[in-house]
Length: 76
Image 1: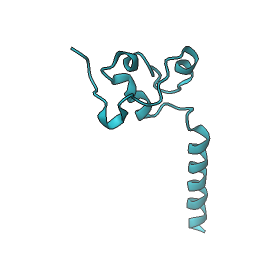
Image 2: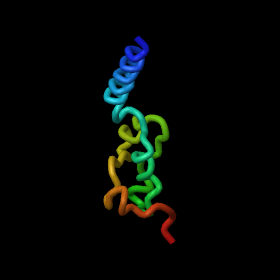
Image 3: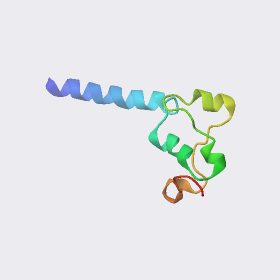
C-alpha cells in the first residue's frame, strides 16, 4: 500500500509538468536573457510566468547559437 501513494504522486507530478509546460519560466528560458547578443538580452524578462514576454513580443524560446554555444555576460 505504501507504493500506491508513491506511484499516484509520481503520476500527478508528471501530469502537472506536462500541463504547465510553457506556462512557467524555466532556467533555460530565462538564461537566454543573459546572452551577449542584444536581441536576446532584450528578451525573456519574466522569472515566474512568460505571459508578459509573449504579450509584448519579447519571448525567445532558444538562443540563436543554442544553449551550449551561447555566450553569457556583458558585451564590451
